[in-house]
Length: 263
Image (cartoon, rainbow, N blue to C red; front, top):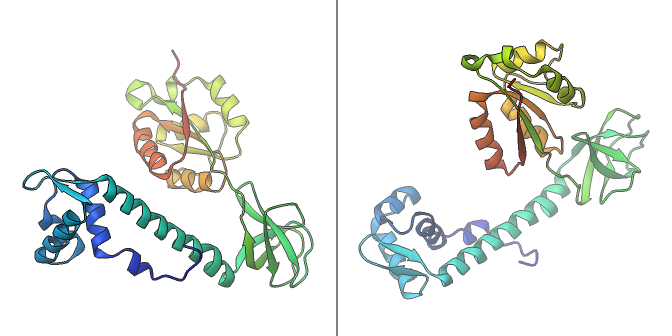
């Protein structure tokens, strides 16, 4: 898109939305359902269908049976790429120019000092360490203090963490009474971010004198930490894990599962 300041609404037009809806619901596509979802009249949807059929982007295989053609798929990809490019422009060029980021001073800093920015243990730091992102301080700060940084340029390198999930038996299968504590101690000894999901998991950690970083809201804490480059350890009751796995998959976060049951 070459940084053109195009209108996002112009890119996500009704025709494009209908094409996406057809692709998402093919082959059984009801025009009335699309009209309800997009809050437009069925007559308008019918006209757009005629256009898409005429342009070869959609193929009709009978009543209520539609498929997006290869040309239609290419149009969706093209539109999605334009939207992605526009959003990148907003985030990198617009927002970064006006937003003040909060970092931790890695050294004593003065006002209007150009600094490098990097992530460490899930937190943003500012100082002279080599990095691909720079900014300018808006005030002075001592080492370890919070400091405002504006005019961010470049990319702050950050890889998502990998979640390691250690399965605890549910109460019907023994709960904390059926845990391999030798293995559990080795696991949490190396972890700086351990969460407990389920009472069985909480008691298992208590039995080895380990206080979890999070219990209430632990699933959300795990996801947030992973997005900040931390690799959390999750000790979770067997029946609580499926919901966490779905959340991780939805967020594109990788994970490993290890069973801590005594055999």
